[in-house]
Length: 266
Image 1 (cartoon, rainbow, N blue to C red):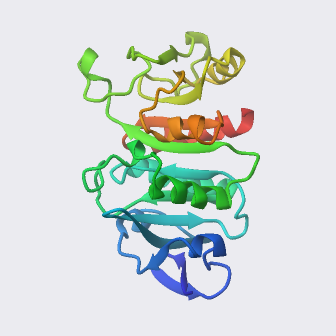
Image 2: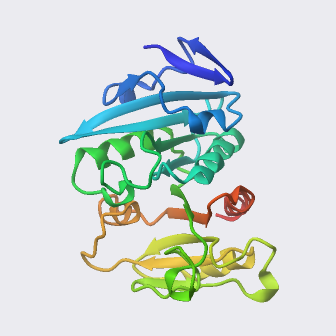
Image 3: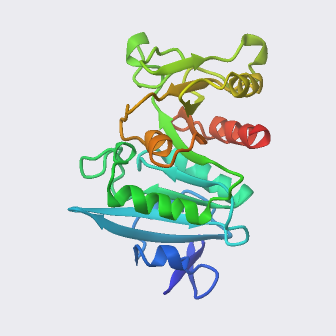
């Protein structure tokens, strides 16, 4: 099957290193790349890029799959929202630097895909099984599951526009803001990481806080399930190694810095 090895602005076909892994090739369709805005914005030298799709009930899901052929095993990132461009750019930086792959929902340019929030569609369905099949094909055992998101400044309760903040009180979430003395210039209310568990791992929190990173800890109990990626990992995969890195739209510098710090300490 033909595949794309991209050195923008030229598309060069390769028959070997950029072929889809067989276990992925057997569960998706590889199609002509049509979602190019995210690609044109980035320097993609050395990466393999494919647009893939599969159908779940009456929804045709489209994704961009990028990976580093020189080190295909590594972190494997999921970017569910096509309007969060900074997350995509951080994903490109990550796999160029650390290897591995990134899977990004594409084709809509919006948060919702055919009226569905891709991060709230992790149910007992084809979508969930195939997304994790793809992610796990590239994920090294040294890494857990990593999601990248962007958000709007502040939150409704304090006069902002967004829904994510280290200052926002949310049921089931425990906030651990960075202490003033540990602030290294990447801590603001909109920049943070999410962890999950049935209880707080305070040693992990203290370590991450000490590197200047705000932490929101999602406590998942019993059969509680909002069908997010984090809940699927906890309930279905029986895993707690989930990290979601959140920063403001356009704040690539901070998202990159948080990711680099986390890879040093976790």
